[in-house]
Length: 472
Image (cartoon, rainbow, N blue to C red; front, side, top):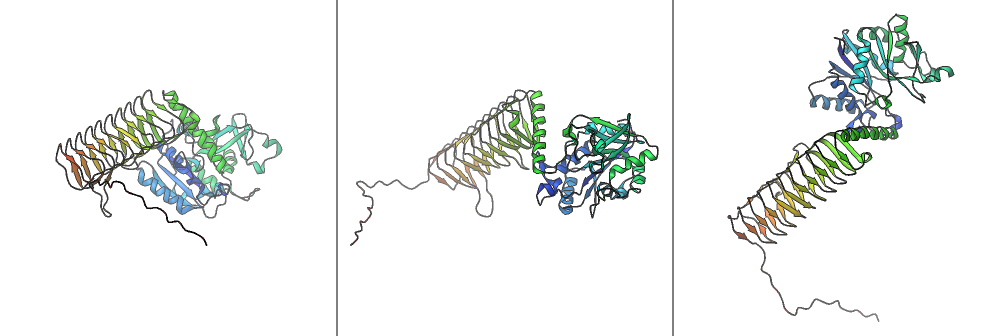
């Protein structure tokens, strides 16, 4: 960037979004797992903006609550909120931000429902502004219906004409204004003060500042791009879905360019940050949320949902596995095999070469190297030693109705099928628990522990028979 001016980002987020047909404010609808407004604020942060000013209106309470949460999650972006009530147009919206804008800044105007503008594009726009010009981000579209048209005199922009105010000749212009501009704050303030609503919509158009700039002899320039996705807005569920696919397609191709093998790039959803090592393969219909790291050679089977998880090299996640680390995270060691149909919950930490099989659920538990729970089991609040074999149908009874308690299985323990380990309890190293046992006390190392009713067999026993009924 060739300017020393501070950057202040103004985000217009006051619109009702009627076509979304939703009670949720439009800018809070999620794209790739994050509200549209969150993407825009991330862009402001990437620009190292001095501040972002969010203009709220419809659904202001919800939008402002999200902004407050965003502020708590990052200390890098100063965030202020102003309200536009009533909503009288884009120019009126930006007027509400004037009291919190410093004269020394360059103001970058963004929309809260245009989430995928790249920081590099905005940096070019800021450079074009140079602290003394009005710079507009434009795009040539085959069908420019609904957009403001760019009127030029050679390389100089003379005006932006809104679609509803445009003549047939002006509507034939294919270069459109994206809604994004960079403008010196001091000039912007003077132009905003001169706006009127003498137009077809009876609104105060921000685009009218172009004619004021021309009248004042200030150069108006355009930075033209060809990537329509960067300036695409969301006005309906259809447009939101289209933009979601465009976003996911770009993520998928970026992963493949870095060597990731995707069975079908059209069937991948990344709703957060996905970091992949070499020779990673991902089958169809997988969803990654939060922060996920896949080490070298990791294989992810079809229809898996993985969130906030680190998976080390060579691990295999079989189909239909659900892993969600939430705030505690999940860690899976190298060479470990998971699933199919397994569920790993927050606080699960698995060592190397661990086997977790079908219909096994693990929560807040640590399994050391070589431990196995291959079938139909539950491990909650457990510490499991090396090479433990945990039988099918067994559970740790970790909750007494008021408090959670921990179960410890030391190295080389063998737990038979259909056992209940009532916490707090420790199974000593090398110990064996016989199938069907309910263990309520600590067991010594190397011992066989069995706790179940004595088997009784009654010879020649006759089952009860139904009594016949006759109708007279």
